[in-house]
Length: 195
Image 1 (tube, helix red, strand yellow):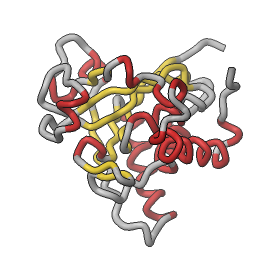
Image 2 (tube, rainbow, N blue to C red; image 1 turned 180 degrees about the vertical axis):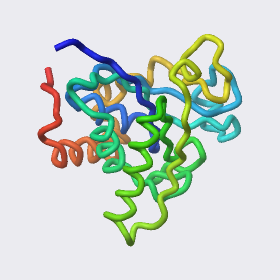
Image 3 (cartoon, helix red, strand yellow; image 1 turned 60 degrees about the vertical axis):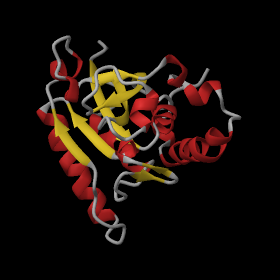
């Protein structure tokens, strides 16, 4: 079967958490941590952490549509973060930790709206879903002429594959690992073979 790659962008707190979970999902071919939605070109981690650039910490996925559906990725996304807390995930606070979905085509937008509605129905006491939903053409997000505010900027190399390289680090042990374990238990049929 031919590989049909599609991109997706999600933000739900620290990108190390999202990256570590999505790396373990079958059909996800690539996960890259980065920044999206701000006013500064090629921002540094320090600039984003200041909260003054408008960026959110996000992950950009490349997934094979023949192996996993975008709706399944949304289910994973909503299960590993709290979409009802504004600009906060756990102890991580600030606009850079906001919940955000960047839909890169109309089908993604429709699936995201449906997933948000379903989350609210399934969790009636959780509070209002505050996930930001943005629609952009993929070329707007990744193209050379992309506007700064809608462009995905890769994070520094030391942020990439962070949990796999530093599993014993305190933040990884107490924040990232529980999300990975939760996803592995919640979605056992979606896990990729680990080397």
